[in-house]
Image 1: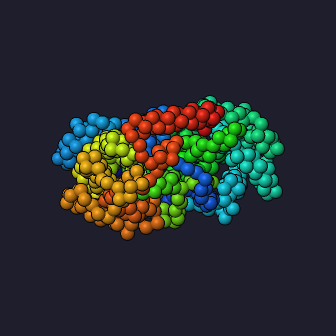
Image 2: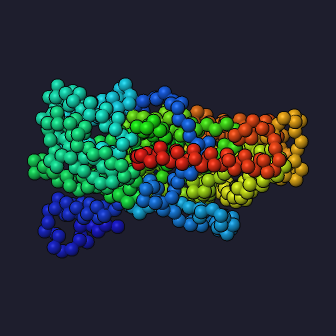
Image 3: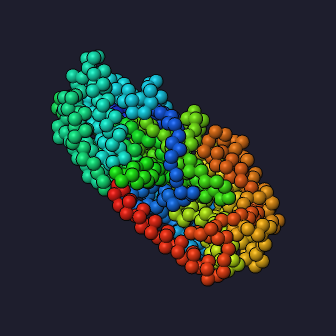
Length: 633
């Protein structure tokens, strides 16, 4: 209890009442000054900060590999948007020692053929929280693409100039993949500044241009007001960077440090940074937290004019055509949208390849750049979707990624067994891809057939073992599945369980079918046929355990479809269910390469196949010569 006036020290008795009151209030305020309140974002109702600026027509010319499973979302290298890994033992939910022991027992001793399961980690401010200031925006009704983004930029600059003088810093990716976008922006510069000038708002506007790649180039050492010079600088002074490095956060740090106190003596200024890129940046792990802190201290809003992140993947693709006519889809870092791997990278076995499933839009920007924009009150403006499937942004608002600092998320994940096991298993699939089973086998003679079958069994046999361990790890976390409040986590967990069970059934049945064929090769119904093809079948002949697993897989996948319609998770579940889980044999004919023959003696077939191998080597050599000038983007 506080003291009464009579109980106060004697020297206070000569003070007037208002003086004593003032002193007591100041003491309370001083004490409150040292109390820090931390606001942590709730799981519901997060405001997204992504602007949808363009719905692109799907480009059908791209021909990706059948299954792109090599994406390293959590590899922890300096080129990764995500941080290094820690032991799977730290990824166990809550204080449940039995779950922790079980997950360690399942994954650590028996997974020697796989990389260590991981939860990514990054150095940074553990107590930092995100204030989501940006809102979903449609570029003020703009026409989309760069034009829509630049209309929004003009609006944001105009609003800033109404408050006070403004320094605008353009930070542009110098890689070759951005040539067209830089040119489009240069063409729009004059229009933007004319809009601002017509309203008499450019007097207090200063601009500068910075490019980055492997190094940062400040192309306007002092901010300028000459509008005409801006487009010329973009067109003529930005040197194309072919290093393949995208050190955007290092560039931002340098610019923020250099111009933090620019024109400080002339009064308060607004500062705005507009990043122009089509990638996520290679140095978020090193500089993201420092850049966020420095931008906040200098009251600098950061905006990004960029691409939608690839759903759950690190790599997107840019189509490149060389002077010699050689074409290639070059991988570039365009994702993922979340800080932690929460989706399993598994091939779709037994069905026709669909590259669009591996290049789906996440409807959000990459985690690090989007979080930077959110923290500083800016916007991530999506000017280009991926060339894979895209989704209704109104639906995807329910599935917004978590933009809190990685350490905050990591602590939360470690307390929930379902999240911990999902991140652990997803990390394995990002680092060690499952093989796509071979489905066509040469039967020019029995020796060739048995050789093909033996080789085809090797990798899938290892996959059966790996899938069993991954399933057991997910199963250990299933006790916490019902505690998941976020739609994104529930969809990801159920899809992971359904797909792993489906994969188990497929790979196990595949190996059994090959083993039976090797022991007792089937006879062709048509004497002219010389090839066998494995095809999907509703009939599961690999035993009651596999039939039970198939039914469980269907239950999980149907739940994803029913509870998360119109999302990437539902689309992948539908694709998985569209292909039967069993296998059957189908015969057909195919000439021995380089001939019109269908069958032959062992010696004759061996000679023909050797010649075919030589032709393939020559073709590969020619391709390597053609692609010597393929740039790093």
